[in-house]
Image 1 (cartoon, rainbow, N blue to C red):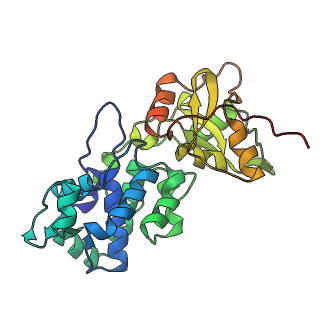
Image 2 (cartoon, rainbow, N blue to C red; image 1 turned 120 degrees about the horizontal axis):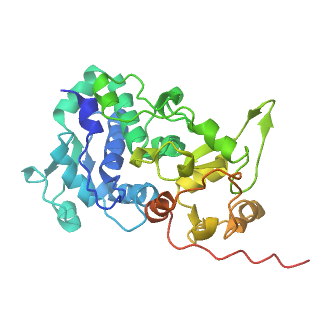
Image 3 (cartoon, rainbow, N blue to C red; image 1 turned 135 degrees about the horizontal axis):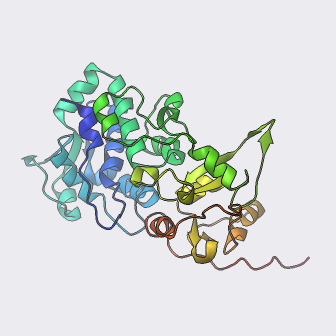
Length: 317
């Protein structure tokens, strides 16, 4: 059985481009648990809180529950659920999952495969990360689910194995995915004249830009094209905040800052809060700015909550 292909083709609920990372998040969490205790199981009542926090931080902006993936992941053949009464999931109801003692773990065949080939765990995790989340979030996600992967396989700026492919994966999952355009970073940074579109940072080390990245507005993992009108040149800080939904793009090329973001220091005020409603810097004349369809996707699927108004000037003295 090709476990990599099966994980790459997890069935997800889709409607109007809505993000649904529920199953990938649960499976990443289960892989992290297996890495720590190959014989353990995840009792729903014990892990519900952690799974809910994962969904709040890395899932869609609207409220959701971990009960759905806990039940529905069984249908993909990579997960099993048992209750105090025996094998089988009791359904998606939160109360019944708690009261029945429902517990889940990786499917028996997958557990056997992971014991025979320990390196498979890292390859499965990288498929999940690369297929469902932007590279800027990969390291944070691994830490959040307790996965210990080779740092060389996680590149916060370039994606899995630095080229958008799946390190160590076979041909089946390569054929199932698009290839990244290696020119994307150069084209976007050039379009924005090698400065962050939000803060203007333009650091160089010798002749090379440092701390500047090409951010996809509509995530590449969610059919976002490698084109300039789907990109922004952002510094490392603002790229991370953009992908986490702290920052967004509004109409009229205005920067949005989520009301959910809280920062009390002067650094937070200057680097984040002060950006609210400012105009985006760039791109240079003759280059297409971010397309409305990509901006709307980010606003609906990534940006968190309502946007702040412009920051009032600090009182004198």
